Length: 247
Image (cartoon, rainbow, N blue to C red; front, side, top):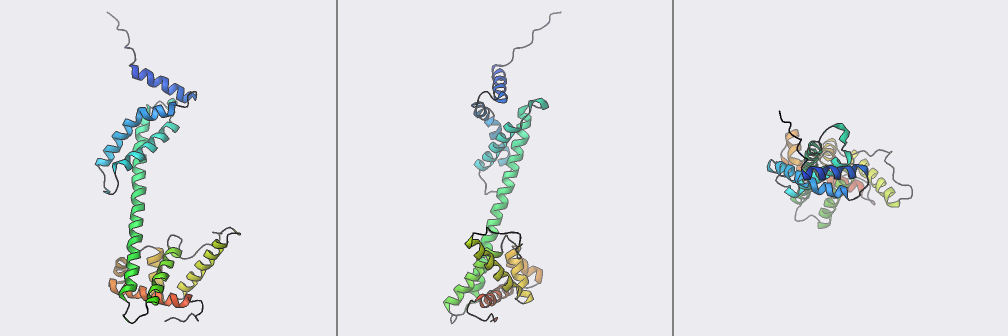
């Protein structure tokens, strides 16, 4: 019986082995770039597969591809040949996971931006719809300014700021901002119960007027009126030269 000699390794396999040996041995700084180029096609294939099954229409193929390349770089940094797993198998999991994580994170950010933009439009419409021709334009502008300030001071930070969130002692602007937040929070606490709950739900918890209306069994128009009343009351409470009396 004739014994067949083992087939010689493919040239590209031999080159890959030599490239990995230099990379893992840390003797050639150019090897990492060469390996990225070598496995870039794997990233493109996995990105195309994920893109073909996309749910969010806002993201482009390049977004998927960039997420995948980040996963490839992570795979190169964390690959351990001693684990007995081929790099293609190890990298495929890393790349696919990086694409999924990136898409979810970016989609969430886009949703947050859209939610915030919608909330700003609702606030502006609330003030505009309640304005009468006789009302002073400056007062309407002041109501809008109060709404914008509330959005800046209450969104993402919670209605009550922890005392442990300290600003640098030498930061004058930081100290001013903290004092302003406390003033706004104190004014909010002085609102009637319904107005205070609306401010909390809308500005702190990011609930839209429609959603609050459903919760309270009220129309969106009525929620807009309550919001407008809260802004006017806050404007009076925060007025520097006023006595803090509600309108």
